[in-house]
Image (cartoon, rainbow, N blue to C red; front, top):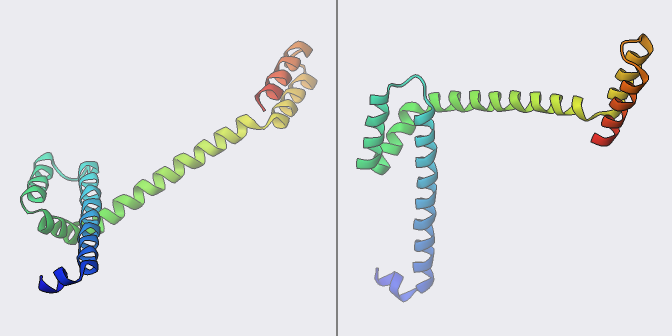
Length: 133
């Protein structure tokens, strides 16, 4: 490193490059460990073997897992995203239905007109709907 010692900026560049590579490797490692523990198609014994491989040969283990399991990782990630999107859509629909006071008042008015509820119950529903907004 004769060149690096005469150019301190080059040392800083190499340090930043090595640090960046380490952070990327850590992110990939945590992604792999998360994927490994979420898998339902693999036995506990195979999960332990993968963890041992990741500990004994960290870089090589990460690359082997990525090469051998990339398709399954993608499929599992897409399934999780679809499930999260579905849950979010259900939440939005449920929250949207609860938070619209005009719709609640209109439904209560229909019930009042049909005789299902009385005026006191209508007033209570109306106050709750207006108070919730």
